Image (tube, rainbow, N blue to C red; front, side, top):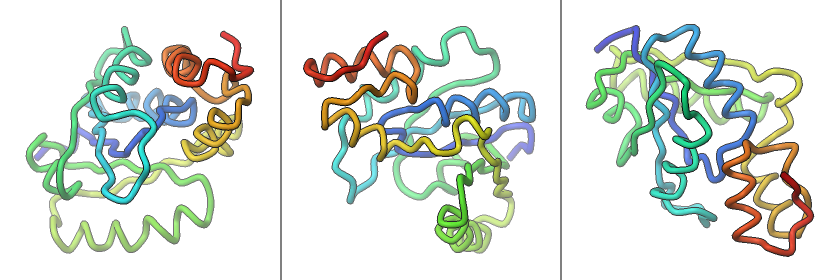
Length: 166
């Protein structure tokens, strides 16, 4: 396990500018950053795992020290299998903290060698969530202020009547 390697797990459905902000800042902290795409058993997914991986890879093209992987099962087991000693999570607000704190404590109990690190988003992206983007896209709104170009194009393809512009 390496403290130089960090896993940034999530469903990333879709990958947003908030996620991209955290990736950019985290890669300055960790020489090996793995964006780990998970499938959530209770979420109604807009894009399947393969589509999300491709969109994230395209959004991160040319960014050194970052790779994309898929994640099955427990996040701490994913950290172990990927050789990462750090689990990276973003906290937008107190609601995220209330959700993430018990998860971090549970992860520590299961894998004490994996340290959870929280990053706060930039003020420009703190309000962005995948849920917000899905709602905007499904209702025909303009998601361009919230997602990278590759994701915007995928949303435009999925929802041709949206007001999104590139």
